[in-house]
Every structure is written in structure tokens, then in C-alpha cells.
Image 1 (spheres, one colour):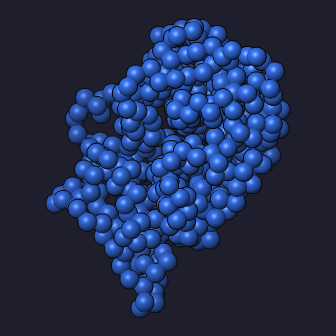
Image 2 (cartoon, rainbow, N blue to C red):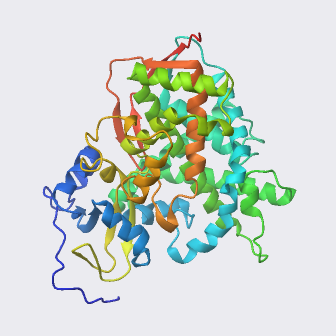
Image 3 (cartoon, rainbow, N blue to C red):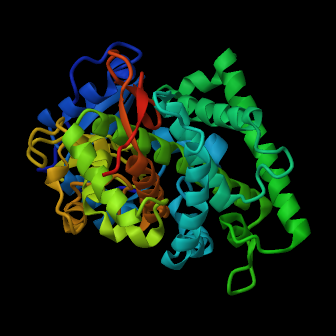
Length: 459
């Protein structure tokens, strides 16, 4: 244990009220997580909560986010309740590995996300978007959350694992089983994050969790083995993960599996959630929906959106930016203090669990007036406001600093391509009067989002 002498002026972080014996604040976090989290800044910039008996420190200000992720990131390693528990199935993937392994893994995976690769990925994504929307019909009611998961999975597979469905055939049962496995893991990860002890109980949910993990592992391992036997570059991300580095070294099969698992789950879940939320908000605002549709139709000329179209879609970019603000899919992640240290004026002990919540930062009314109002007008048409907000740590849906999500441009591209292609041809309206609510899991997603399709009349 490292000990650092801290000024006497440093104080203990305030504790949030309402903790219950034995479980702490677990009930609030499970029942109404966003309401609970957005109240925490009223107690301080760093607030102690209890997940069971163990203290956890929640960061509530952009200044402290900067300290942890940028200026003093060596004092805070990957770890804590989120990463310690999802690493059970991600292993040492790029998103979950400790700092000591990150530089090497980033060096291997960075080429797969080089800007020069994005136009090719966009072409593959466009084919999948067309394949999914080709089946849509006037008046059809879509289960948007499920359908966007399918679309996101097809895009992820086409760009990452070109032969994923080659042997099994991309039939409906295969797609359903794979999405079911992803859904089980995303749901189970959050429960393990906030209630770590539950993973040790002999529950049916834990058996399903292990089965889903093993099923995806087996498919990834078989695909990796087939790629190694073929020895040819298929032009996808997996082929790049299997290539040797400049010094002649390569990732092991286990390391490749961990990178694929990370990219696969993150690529599907984040993209699907952001597509669903954006379509939800546009379905409630005819004027904004019409403006986005007119822009997309004018730029894309009635065909699918392509990579070169994206800079010409400022209205859509503002809408997507606001969706990432108001409903950041990756809404919680954690770090562990590696020394006795401080954050702002608060003492933080060695080994402390620290939670960073983009949701909290994005819903501070001093940063975003009326934070619960969906307002793309917050963002300028040239994208500078996103960059400025990111530099100020006010907008951090992908994290920031040296460990910012490597796939941020890839994800934004796929969301933009999908929305531009869909909205140019289809208007989506609420199909029921049921309120759309938030599902608080490791990714926040909408519940009860059923939208009806209407073919746009182009003048």
C-alpha cells in the first residue's frame, strides 16, 4: 500500500443519504438509477455511496473527471465494481485491461480504426442497413429496441467478423440466439457491477449468463481458428487483430478473443441503444423529424447514406450529439485508486472504488440548462460545440484521455449512416400510448419503444 501525505485541509467525501443496512444504496440504484445519480451533485463534487457494505466514490463534476481520466490518470487504474465483474467475460479486452497492458493492446487494435478504414466499413454497413429496411412495410409496427439490436449486430458482424454467419447461415434463429446471448451478458453485467456477490449464487440467471458467455466464446474461437487456417486477409477487423505488429509479435488466441468480445458487445449495444433513443426523440417532434428527413434526402439523393455524406448532415449530427448527451449508452464506468490520494478537496484511500457517470455530468443544469429536455439546438452545425464540450469534460459519452473508447468515430458513423438512410424514406410515430421508460443496465436502453412506419411522400 502506498501512502501519500495529504494536506490537512482535505476532507472526507460526503455520504449520500438513504443507505440501508447491509445493502447500502443498492435499492435506489436498481429501482430508479438515473434519479438517484442526478441527485448526487447536490451533496458535493465527490460523493460516497455504499454498494453493500463497501464504500464507492461517485464523481459528480467535470473537473474531477479530468483529474481521473487526463491529468492524473496514473493514480487511477481500470478496476472497481464495473470492470472487475465484466472482465469475467471480456477478460483483458482493450476496454477492461489494466493500464500496464493497455499500450500494447492499443497498438495492435488502433490500425483497425484508422480513419482511412471508415469508408470501407461504411460501405459494408450500408448493405446491412438496406437488407434490414428492405423488409419494412407501410403501417408496420417495429419493436425498435430489438430491431436496432439486430441492425447493429449485422453492421458489427459485417465489419468485424465477415464469416461469423458463414457456416451457420445468417438465418433468423442464428440471429435470435446471438442477440439473446448479448442481451443476457449486457443485463447480467450491470447486476454484477452493483451487487458483485450475486455472481456466486446458484441462480438460473447465473447459469444463463455462463451459457451465453460460453456460446459466444465458442463461436469466436471457431472463427479465429478458421481465419488462422485460411491465412488470408478478409478485410475486416478480425484480420487486423490477427496480423503481426511491426516488431514481429502478435496477439495470442486468448487476447484476440478478448478484443473481439469487447468490440462485439460494445459495438452492438452502444450503436443499438443510440439508434433507438434517437428515433424515440424524433418520433415526438414532427418539425425536427421533417428537417432531418429533408436534409438526408437532399444529401443522399434517395439512396443509402455513404461515408462522404456525413459532413453534409449538420442537422442530423446535432440530433445525434444531443442523443449522446441525454442518454449516453455507456452511463457508468469505474476506476480504482492505486495510492492514497485526493480528488479536489476530498481524501481518497488506496484501493477505493470510483464511479464516473457521463449521465451525471450530462444532466448538470449548470452545464446544460433544462437537462432533461431534448434540444439539438444546444449544438452548432459545424461540430465545434461537441469538441468544446468534450475538452471541458462536459460531454464524455466515450470517456476521454488516453483510454477514450477506440471505436468512437466508428460508432458515430454507424449511427449517422443508419439514421440518414432510414429517415430519408420513413417517418416513425409512436404506436402505443404506453410511456417509454429507461432500462438501467450496463447500457441504458428504452423500454416499450414501439414505433409505426409511414412511407415519406417526397415532393
